[in-house]
Image 1 (cartoon, rainbow, N blue to C red):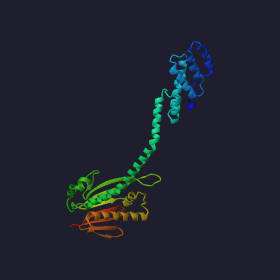
Image 2 (tube, rainbow, N blue to C red):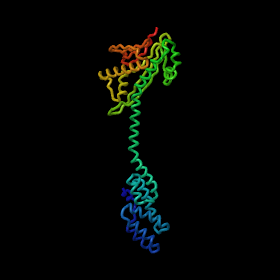
Image 3 (spheres, rainbow, N blue to C red):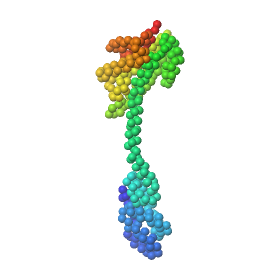
Image 4 (cartoon, rainbow, N blue to C red):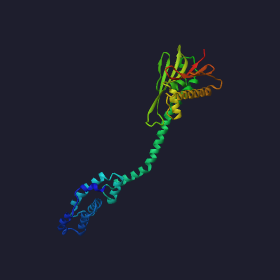
Length: 313
């Protein structure tokens, strides 16, 4: 590392011979300091001797010569080697009070702090990233459950949609951003969820969509549908389990449907009480609680649907 500065012209024994005549008129200490610089063995020692000469011999006979060598040599060494831990340590060894000594101490202190705290900071950042990823993965399922509870709790069935919008379902949730898109048969609110697929060798993100559809018939509220496009129950299961799920695997697909049906039924019975009946076919599970029916199934297009329907006349 110290060899980096040797490309700069250094004084030789010939220089010392030429200086002998001038030494006759110079102070002994001045000449001794100059001689120590000329005869110094090694680049670091020569830097130290030159700096010592310049600090002590303020009016020395050879000050200009020493300065012409030292300052380019010191700058070159500091630039090329002194910005590394080893280089900074070497700089301070030879030039503890040199032109860049305080910068080197600051650099070393920062490097030592980073050596101590860097791994802890990296560990904390990784843990925070994992927690954020887990929250993102679970967001879809939590939204499905929350909207199921809200829909089951609606008390304005068979009334105009404005009645729904005036209640907590509409004001606090359905009308909140992103704004729903409406047509003559009702309104749809589209929620998007992006999460990292867990345990993948090559990290990838998955994007899931939940459509909350408020349906009207002849201007009256008759149903609320939660639609998860493209076998969305698989993504719900993936986020809940924290493991990658292959939607094309028949057993995984069957598991996702069963888990979704069981979870929705649990929510329905928690909200509506125990006076509910259940019947099930291959395509759908129906839970009937008085004048309200909840159906969990799959559309012909392959979308997974939770449909809450009013049975009131």
